[in-house]
Length: 235
Figure 1 (cartoon, rainbow, N blue to C red):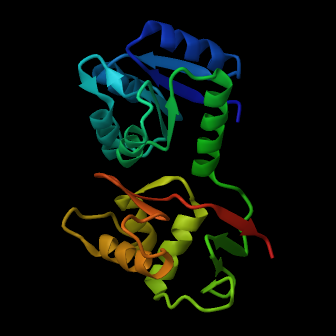
Figure 2: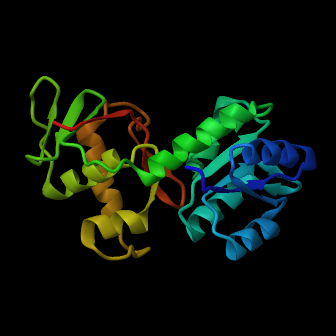
């Protein structure tokens, strides 16, 4: 994972310099931006693997920028912010961030979080035979899902495909276009509500009843992310 280009977006020169110096030490290429305009200029002019984004960019709100960024392209985003309340983190993740880091930060933590996020996006090479999550598992060879006590999960064929997509990309924000192409082999239409319907039905079958979904989380204006832990088995 040596050939990585990171776009650091922060309106504080000192923060940009700290991140630039630390990330260059990893052998990575670092680009800088300090507002919405320079961010999208850098994305137009360069191939970027991951973006670090401050929540406060002068008078601009990083949450809105994150949503617009997700709508334009599916690129990993790590929010780095001085806002340290749980609600701030939830807002950041719901706006499309893959991770949330609180200032002041250790550069080593940023490096590790970037590596972990990129690994989720790129995925492992070997295909697993089983994917275990929460108190259930998906057997890819036999195309069945069950609880760990052996009780079957009564999923439709489309729900199985959707669950497999989520479990193969845990922690990665999947756009509605990606989900639509995986399920139907076509791009998503804003008038098409079938994906949301499939997700809602899948949630009811795999989630523990409660006020908020814990495994499949909505990302505002973008799509969904599987936020539970997944264990892969080769046999």
